[in-house]
Amino acid sequence: MQIRPYADADWAGVAPIVLDVVRSADTFPYDPDTSVETLRSIWIEQPPGLTVVATDGDTYLGTAKMGANRPRPHDHVATASYMVSRGARGRGVGRALVEHSLDWARAAGFSAIQFNAVAASNVGAVGLYESLGFSVIGTVPQAFRHPTDGLVGLHVMHRFL
Image (cartoon, rainbow, N blue to C red; front, top):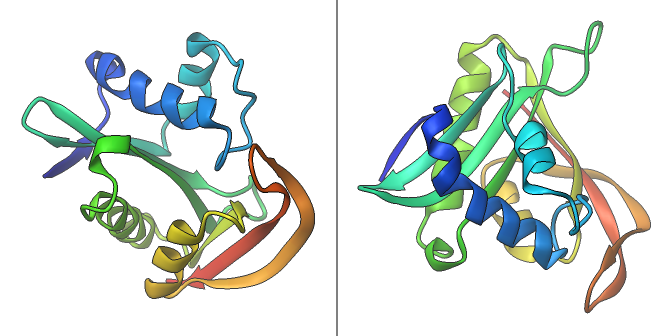
């Protein structure tokens, strides 16, 4: 697996991952009816942020975006988001993307990283983040409308770098 910066030519491989994750409506707070063009503008981070792709040869396994969580005076805390293709889940792609974003955030001079809205029902992601040193610092009750679990909490997760 290779993780590298996103290039415009990558959208053809990234779009199916983003569309599948968003349309499943069980992890991300994006409207499942959002157009592919709008999703592209949301997902592709502008510098000094970064969007990356994880590939195995010509196969796109996942993607991540990272940048400052908020503008000044809060821009010393990073944030990131991750999407892994359905067929690549459980193969370490998510872990590699998170580790990549942690390395990027450290190198970019951030002092911490925070995830603002991790669905409590996304136990795989929560467990992965906790195994990498993140803590749930708060949960907004019933803030996410999961398609099968109903109203679930949204965790705010944090770790110092």
